Image 1 (cartoon, rainbow, N blue to C red):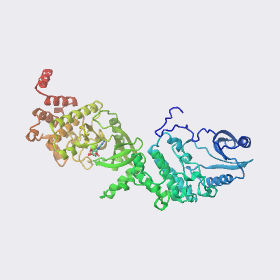
Image 2: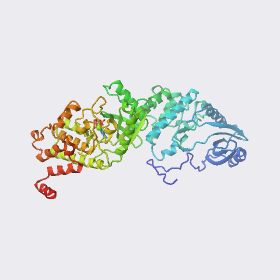
Image 3: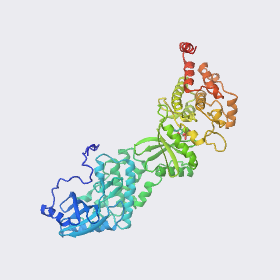
Image 4: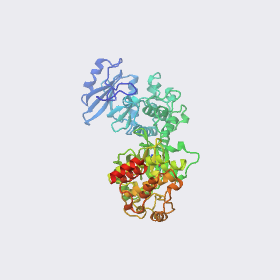
Length: 589
Ligand SMILES: Nc1ncnc2c1ncn2[C@@H]1O[C@H](COP(=O)(O)OP(=O)(O)O)[C@@H](O)[C@H]1O
Ligand SMILES: [Mg+2]
């Protein structure tokens, strides 16, 4: 296949089939025996191709003429041999089980010197083959774990211990499901396995199985964990000390590592005793492993568990970043892309209203179209299990409110940079018909190098509507909202410019310009223009700058800057030198 790259493992792919195109192994059967197969089986099967061959066995992809379907046709060549009895016992073992993750046997028979069985033809490649391209994507391994453990549980209820699953015999179907194809070493077949069979010594088998013991369900727990370990890290688990998988691939969820390390304990009693036990731990609240000393209230924990379940294999919750009026923001790991992102999950009570949800999606679509260095990118929006979330770029650093609280008011140049960057972002959004509606210090994220990233574009409209206040208010104290927002009137871009002006006051004074416990109290101050003086406490703020900010927070929209560009020009002027001001006046006149 073209484009099938060699991998970090340095191996060359052998192609898409899980059975490599075989150069005949040294121990091939006698040619006359082999040539007898076709005439013996042809009446019932069309032998399409030989996919594997050993001294005693051949495997064909064949067409079952009667049932008119593709089958895997396994032929045993040597009559009256120990291997023949083994083959028959393997048939019985396969036949005892009926699970989608286990290859199932259709028919078994003897013809001439041959014994054969047909099983479902599994389309795909072996795990081993897939690994040649490198470790498997984490989400697909997560679903493989569930598949394999479910199959184990099925086998165990039929008193079958698989004992050993190796990467060459797990086939990954095109759908991504893993199928166990080989039960030759199961406990039912153990009497037929030669004691010196080297295949038992694999690192994928539990120590007791390597020692030739029949094993128990916890041995299968080990072998599945070993397979998963390999799929995630491209390293076989060591025979003695097992390296923690996250040291090999840091993006592996911490909870998965915990489960694997327990399942790979050398002492059977210290592992999970059943596949179900392991499965439960695997799918359950991964967070219990990192429970903080002081745990949050049960309802919060319950919520986080619900979120973890809803996020499934797509995201691992790492840490809560903060909570706002509409939901919570978490630092999570995108397990597909193996990078950290921010995820905002909406308060479940919001999700109950389909109208709100539809508006939310529409606004998110609009916001996702914004492309600007000072705007946080939205990556994805999803809902599952009654929860709605969206995923965005994770901004390192703190928000403006946190910074001011920690370090106090901003110096003038830093405030100017913030304003210019914010205006650039707003100009971009406004030109596309999107009004932020919730410009406030908490939504102004600042990277360590000082770069501003504005988050939550358009969400306020979706979730709150234009109204603040009232019993349904979810937005905290609206210190930075324009008066028309507080009054529930229609807002346009001028509301954003107002809020940005208020944010500038906050940056310079370390408090909002209009304070009040309720929207009404704030509104009263806004409409009487009861603005604090900046220069009273900050002599370093130029007079023209204070004048420019005053204009920005005029209660009457018509008296404010009408566009972001106009606001920026005013700031340019306010902070420019004498020469710049003269040029400005020349241009204006
Ligand atoms: N993309 C992001 N990257 C990093 N932190 C973020 C991101 N989005 C939001 N936050 C932080 O998460 C916290 C909670 O955000 P949110 O739920 O919007 O509430 P609010 O904005 O009202 O504080 C805020 O402190 C904000 O700084
Ligand atoms: Mg926010």
